Length: 189
Image (cartoon, rainbow, N blue to C red; front, side, top):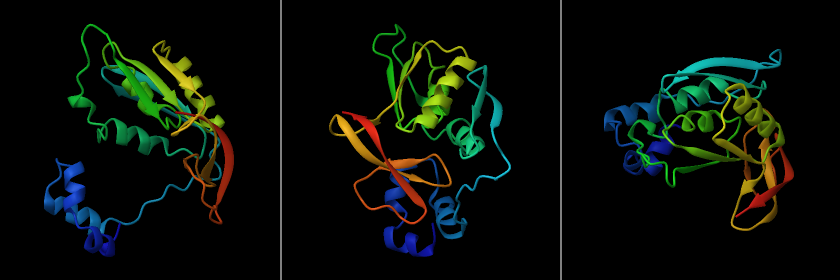
């Protein structure tokens, strides 16, 4: 983000989505935060992190192109999904959580610790699906299910555009940029 962004959009719309930030804090974040992009180290082959959430120790692994530490921080410490305010039905009826674009499963692992939760992950990138399954098995979770597909308006196949430096991407019909690749993936509505 930069000054041009803050002048074009303003901080009002952003504050509606991030109500716990003060106006001054948001101005500092927009105007002075350097642009961030994850760049994997070429020498890293695999990452392993142990973290605690909800009183349980979680062990996760991912390939070198996943910003693993940042993803864990965003989900747990920063509480980007506001899980501390999450209330589920105590009887367990209807506590189905859908994680669309599950990446390597960090959010799904955290959500699986909510009382009576059943989590379904949707992830179109096969490399990520493999990591999710390994992380589910490593943490002995029986309430997380994985679907190897994107979620779109219709069933079938779609183009999925990926950044070459990482394992993130998006469903697209547009042309890819010079540092991106595109592949066909299964899609469910």
